[in-house]
Image 1 (spheres, rainbow over the protein chains, first blue to last red):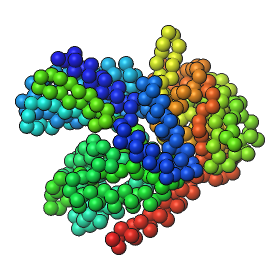
Image 2 (cartoon, rainbow over the protein chains, first blue to last red):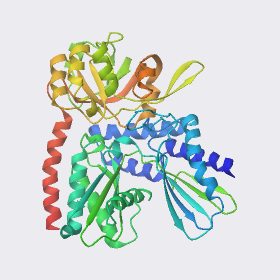
Image 3 (cartoon, rainbow over the protein chains, first blue to last red):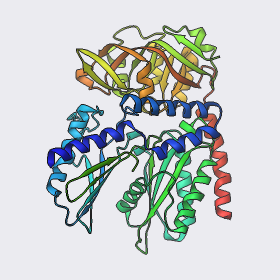
Image 4 (cartoon, each protein chain N blue to C red):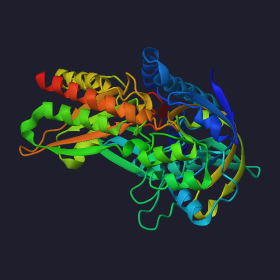
Length: 288
Length: 195
């Protein structure tokens, strides 16, 4: 089971690095159709790059990211130990086979082990759910966009209008650095760490899929409109499309706190999805 | 309409370019990120860099049958090199800098002084860049700096599209877009407050 799991996870890592999900491609095509000038040149280059990467089976971007896994595992899932050990092993193999750029550096010694593993990396979030299967979302996240993530501890009195203002201001300040058009994940509430995690979880949704609760969905639409009115444009060279989508998630907050986690994902919004049944059947899809 | 520049590129050719132009580069480009900038400034150029294109990039490469193969090679964030770039331009005179996100006033001034341009290559378009790279000529400081930070010398054919984002006449698209974004931000925030 372990060997099979490693093999399928390598396949998922390859899929994530080389094939952009269809929802992201559609959003980029729609953006290209409404742009002109340098903005259109950028989107055409992006789409040609996406086609090339898929045809040749090579990484979309040379920054193949930090390998990040969100695992939702049933309390009765029978292969927990196999899965736990398969993840770093798959990352090592994928680094060699895809290949992925070695992206893990020791902060003190600057030594890069060269296999994309290290202390706490690959980063795995385990969530226990009822049931006997497991679901894994892969989110390889590049450094340029990760550098544009931000935590803001707002005063609760500013409310949701304050959240909106802080998000729009921050994305305006980022300009072209996170490789726009981006997908922005906004996490509201919880606490400092949880708000950022919620922002990341928001990125697992297909681009443009609204939050099921109407007031949250309305905030997503308002943020998209406000940010796209800024004129940052693709790659910060000006234009109508600064974000492909804004996804919002929330948790209950402490009465004295209004944490806001802003997570920025570059246009190469790479994801893959793996489902493992209790019988050991493993399904890998790129279009999570 | 789209111009292809062959390296070594002459200063007067580069001075004809204006912010917003789209060009391609053929010939020799070399990569240098922050560590490589420091090493070159300390120890001098390993081969003449004048007229070449400097690429802010940490590529994904693989060695096959003894030869390096470039898998993906998009640009990295140029601003990290801002403190080193003006001196680098003055000393080594590359005529084209290729990166993403733009650079600051120090570099803009040095571009005008030296006669060079900063071009934006689409961030993340690593496969598109790799397609234009025909071979790896040399690699310098690989052992010392590691794959992403080493100085890679590529032979390229029609590398681009490159948007001239900072020209040698003091114009920067980033500064212009930045001013527009500031003005738009005020309007957007005023509307948010009314709403």
